[in-house]
Image (cartoon, rainbow, N blue to C red; front, side):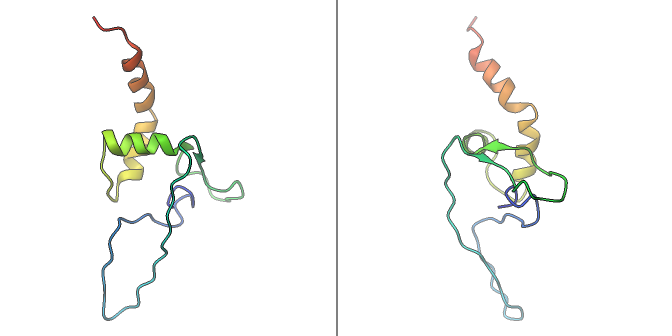
Length: 97
């Protein structure tokens, strides 16, 4: 949700905290796009882009191999995208010596 909204809405972990003094609002949805689907905010977004385009497969590979989900996942994933996938692909293609 955070990447789709260009940072307007913050992603949260799957948990709920009840507070007797303040009303809680939540939005429940399930999102499992095709692996090749590009995740990006709508083109009409007036603010500068905070996150690069990525595929669902890239995010799944990152969270399964490198970094489990927490509140900093999207920032860590963005840094990894800037150099991680290319280096990972090169290492996989390199001949064994």
